[in-house]
Length: 145
Image (cartoon, rainbow, N blue to C red):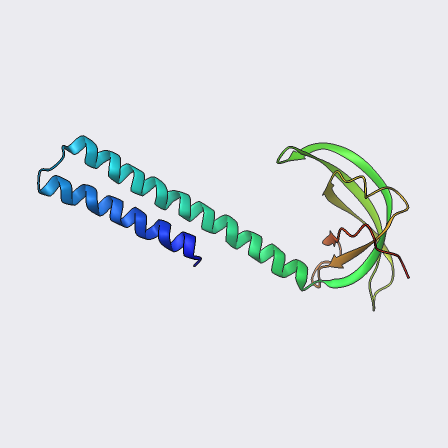
């Protein structure tokens, strides 16, 4: 668990505990306690969602890093009308070459990069389990051998 996350968890527990303690000793009214407990619960719910997102991102990064390094030639880039965090997504058709496998054509969904023009040769990583799961490694200085 990261230091920031640990601090937030401890802070949420202390916030909830402070609210309950202040109520027991009648220092504050129940409205303040409700506010403090709600803030603590909101923090915990946020951390649960944040942890799930971070775990998924780590899983995808490990999967990509474990992929087989190869090269791909961009054959076609077609906008598909979808967006991810405000970035337009394209269907990118690739001719993929990885060691030990015959070349093949596949399509991936990728954000809109000017870098990905038809004819461009780019480094990729290919999933060991599914050859159609391809991650494009952005490297504008890459020169195909």
